[in-house]
Amino acid sequence: MFLTPTNALLLLLAVDAPDRILVNGVVHTMDDAHPMAQAVAMTAGRISAVGSTADLMATKGPRTEVIDLLGATVVPGLKESHGHFVGIGQARMTLNLVGTKSWEEVVARVAVAVKARPKGAWIVGRGWHEGKWETKPQHQVRGFPSHDELSAVSPDNPVYLVRADGHAGFANAQAISMMKITKETKPPTGGDIIRDESGQATGVFIDKAQGLIRPPGPTEGDVREAIRLATEECLRKGITFFDDAGEDLSTIAIYKDLAAKNQLGLRLHAMIRGLDNLKRFGPPQPGGADSFLSIRSLKLSIDGALGSRGAKLLEPYVDDPGNTGLWVTDPAVVSEAALYGIENGFQVNVHAIGDAGNRAVLDAFEAAFKAHPEKKDVRFRDEHSQILDEKEIPRFGKLGVIASIQGIHATSDLPWAAERLGEPRVLEGAYVWQKLKKSGAVLINGTDAPVEDVDPIKSFYATVTRQSETGVPAGGYQPDQRLTRLEALRSYTKDAYWASFAEKFGGTIEPGKWADLTVLSNDLLSVPDSEILSTKVLYTIVNGNIAYRSGWFKKLH
Image (cartoon, rainbow, N blue to C red; front, side, top):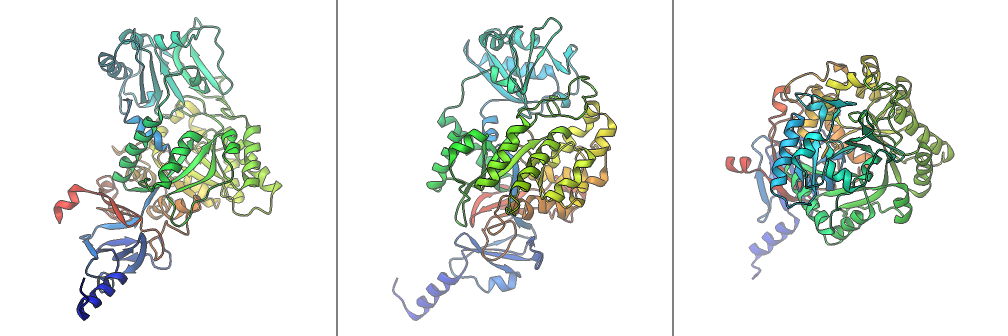
């Protein structure tokens, strides 16, 4: 370019000017000092200015893109604090059973899949949830159907269908036979095989017993495709940062490869699954200001899930007397992991659903803290914090243990939780979010996807209303335990980023932080409850780039 005085001035302005400005919006910065604004400017992947539309428009250069939000709402990039990233993609690559309303519908979907597959080919699916079936199977064993109807439609294909929560699976007769499972087969420690009166397997395998059924595993190409699909799904739903709650080392290696090539489409806080894997991994890799990947956490599961009666309880299940659930991981191993983590700079995050499971996790964490009082900022997490004995609740705040909740689990589980636990136990300690906050605990939020839809809007709605999407109260239990709008938004932004050691880089809209933003059609802090679920994601911005743009909003421009 030939530099006339005018062109030289324009070039100088272009260098100093922002790359993109969002104007005429309702900006919730989550910065306590300056909570509201109208406009946000972004330069080189960072927020460069926050303020009024007039002030930021004055910084516009000839190459600056200006997006008029027409009154839309901007929040810090929403963060999923507990999900299974590859699982989201894999759910789109296998037989989808999410939303099935009966056992008959599950069987029917398998029958359709059988017609499209050659004999002998495995049929794998996920997403059934007997607690959500509108009609119950005629014959049940411990709350689950038998495989007879499933086997009748798939005599020549092994079938394995994973429950929505991943803590149980359903096999047909062909799969059971191929895996040589008989009356004499014993479940592994931490697992259970549901059997009928004659001792035969009904097809349901709980927690670690799922390892007895071994469909072909995914190839590296399958995992990479699942990552691509998961990224697409999350960006479409406004998520810019994702805590991946437990992956093996081979998947971690793929994440590292993608990160090195700048091919991760959103930021990942990846947890290494299992203490043995953690010890093989080496020192933590915390990421940094320019990183899309941090690897500094361990994930363990101390017990199973409530729906499959694997959550470890202090007293037996009301609807399954004699059963107190499962220790999926020996509490002694959790104690060892807590010590190893605190001594080697790893955050320790443990799945705990039942009241006994939660007590054991808090015991393990407390012992590690006492052994190393010099460690002041470890941010250990209790993943789910679902069913608590009242005596344990104050320990969260006292110990500084993060309660990693999933708001939408409450409305999924509470309508039938009393059948499992009895009403007194539910009233005392099921999804007691305000009790946890009053203890001083930090709460962060997520969906446990693909157990639930990864959509943060649905989980936000459940968190602040404690109602299902159809407006049905979650069993009528403890409406006073729901979070306020601001508390719920913090659980998806400011507090969520802090829980993954990323508060210096994101979670609030401030100059110098990541230009990771979610633009919404409604103001979640002010719209009526009835309008929350109609909220649309208009833009998902990652590192200053538009990663998702709603076609609906584009038409308004």
